[in-house]
Image 1: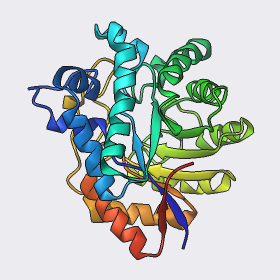
Image 2 (image 1 turned 45 degrees about the vertical axis):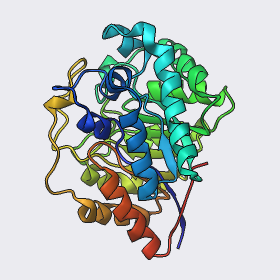
Image 3 (image 1 turned 180 degrees about the vertical axis):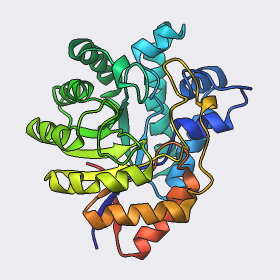
Image 4 (image 1 turned 90 degrees about the horizontal axis):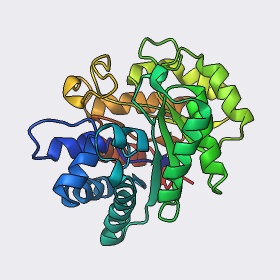
Length: 302
């Protein structure tokens, strides 16, 4: 069998579920970290370590300058970034775990809405600020949930000029057409990213069925590839500035059902696996047992 770089599952959604706040906030798990302190964040990291994850992603998904400023927390940008990195490292150290810490380069304005993205130059400037905050405390960067090529390329530039490999994860439309949420064809985007010299490409925060349909394009790209799907029923209700209270978890995507999709991806050649929103520690623990039982070796991403 093969080595599988084994990521964690959904972080922000899991943190949000454990919050004592009566409702979600546009800053999601960043608001929890700022207002409720480190305990919830570290507990989720520990749960993923215990589940078998070999990579912990820092809790910085909504801690972009644009999002924090828009929600009245702009002055907390640096502290939020540094705290997110520190908490992931603390969890690793406390557990004595041999796991990698992944920095997070998310969509800068909104998830899933490609039309809301900044242009290339503004995106590059903002990604550089995030990289500068995280780079001394992480082992790698995950560029994730990116819905258009321009924003992906800006993030790749920010990461590579800082001396890191580019691991890029794209979010695709859930209509099984193998297109980004921008409407760009996945195969064309993969070719452009290959020309840019990225280390690997993934698909995330999309229906697992949509990722199933996109696997042939990934396999044909010549790139190292993988996937980590979400467990939402739909994402149409999430608009810029809204909250995850508008989204609903699927009832038909428990750990065993998710593993069926993962097996398909690995069958196509995927070697990077994890989970995104609503794919939690129970899913990751089941996958760890399932994959090692098949003879795969779970390793860090690098």
